[in-house]
Amino acid sequence: MSKLYNIFRELSFIRGSLLTLVITWVLMRFGVSIAVPYWSPYLRELGASPFIIGLILSISNIALFISRIPGSYLADIYGRRRIIVVFTFLVAFTQLLYVYAPDWRYILLAVVLEGIFLIYQPALSAMVADLIPEDRRGIGFAVINVLPSISAIFSPLIGAYIVSIYGLETGMRYVFLLITILYLISAFLRYLFLEETLENINSGFNFNLKNLFIDSIKSMYRGLHDSPRSLKMVILILVLSSIEDPVFMYYISLYVFDVGGLSEYEWGLLISLFIGLSILLAYPSGWFVDRFGRKNALVNAYLIAIPAFIMFLMAEIPYMLWLSLTLLAIGTSLANPAINAFIVDYTPMEYRGRIYGLIGNLNLVSVVVSSPLSGYLYELNPRYPFIMVLLLNILIMFVLLRYLDDSVGVN
Image (cartoon, rainbow, N blue to C red; front, side):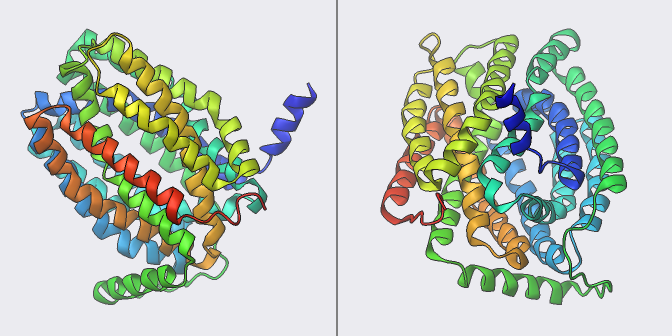
């Protein structure tokens, strides 16, 4: 009983605006997690080849890149709340395009609009960083990353059921209609309950697009220039990691069907188990980050991830996919809170919006390049994108061991 009380006391900082964000993430994650395992097969059903799928992701990230530049600046000048609320509503209405898309070209239009409307992401990241106490950053980021996943444990199985009943195309249209409703509810909750966290807000809004982009880029460069070397190394690690994103966002769901031979139900069950394991590991992972340091957590995460990727390449062997994704869940649970805590440790509050915007933009540049490349490699051989991921993880481990200094983690 006392242990349970201590856990609740540790998590007492999750209230007010932070609790509102967590609740909306729960709703959004529940809906999105129904669609994600079947997203690439849905695009293929609408006529997109693996290369076109990568091109769609690349173009959507160009739109997101453009929106992040002013978004990061606006978050630090005009406040977090108003940007988050307005553009959450716009993202919600964009989901209707996924519902009625007759072919992949309409999906391309939808992802471009959604990328533009996600201008609020730097403000969202900055608000979360503002709300988590300094001595709770490791466990704080671990818990808020995983709490929304609780509602998503059974989402992939729900997706598998809908697809099996209505077919892939019709079933996914119903799924995106549900996502639209959940996003609208989340937008209203943010409008009603979020409170501003930035103290000095410019109440005027003199919008000059050219000057806004120039000032944003200058501000992000200034924030990076003034950052310590360790933060620069963490940003480098994130950029290298983001090259892997298209592989796991778009091509893993094709790989498990084309190479692993899984059924829709087996794939949904595997994703549900992955989410459940991540939830179980959230609290101990956050504790490990706070107790033993950010660098130790990252090193252990990649020591687990590298053999997991090797196993993933042997997908035809029974249960190898299951073992691989189990190890990846462990590694990811360690890496995510460590990276987030590292960034906040070394970033002053007044620069957080710009630094998060810079990180997001650099990551997006990597994704823009790697998305069509991953699609091209997949068309050559479904294993090639995952071999690329394995080599990237080995490179990241080298950067971790050689250049990253963790002088804050245990303080």
